[in-house]
Length: 388
Image 1 (cartoon, rainbow, N blue to C red):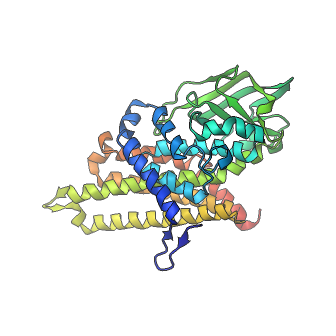
Image 2: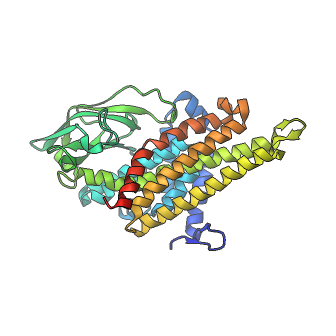
Image 3: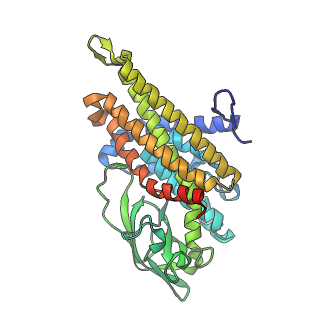
């Protein structure tokens, strides 16, 4: 049963099952993620043990079919989960999203043999997965990727480099887009590459602004042998597979922004209720109240927009792609702005790591870039409007 919209409030009225899913994710995040998030960020620690704890909760295969251990949930259900996890740590939540995107590609496009071989261990989180599309010379122009895969007997041999890969070196499986044919999107195929594949290696962990909890490395293929049975679908179908995963990925990363921004607003409300200046609590100053009111309004608008877009994707509405792009652009922009405003309301304390606000600002900034930059989202939206 889908969530309904209350005509009086505009709020989504979640089903009993959806409320239970949301509460489960919130409880896990509060217990196992939130108390550790700042330490993981400071130490640049990838908490594989805690990530694997999400498997028994059904979060390793959120929208993977249940015959291979998946939870078979919908996109709105997934948005609720990622929003809840991100209130504790957006970087943690976003890795769970990436893992699920990779798993869902195998579920949707893999053969039954591939699904049975890979997905039970992915759904249980025994294996972690990463998604490999971006390259040093191809980001927004994904169809220009150069990594090649050449057939050699019963194997494919991959050569090339992937860039900005979350979980690289820590994940057990890599869903990789590589060129088996000529230039352009029709020459791209998809492979499932195990971590121990001969010829697979990883670059140094990148020094980056946020997402310190996640490893981010190059994935390097040097005559990397992959069994031909690890080709997903058929040769030449890889670009379509990559694009099919992006609508959901965009909603997921928007949900991570929403959860992180809600955490920032919660912290700002608590701080301004305690901090005094000029003899009064600072939340008694009208100028500050107006800023809090705008933050709340913008977050609620973003939440309704995101839930509506997720519902469209669940229903396979014809305009679901446009709504996914609009929601990704709008929610990630709002999320960063709200977190940045929360930092400002904390004054100098917002700049200190122990208050957790500057981490949220750093983590949410990248959401405006990945899963398609927000400029590319505008291109997608505009093309649907002018009929291209």
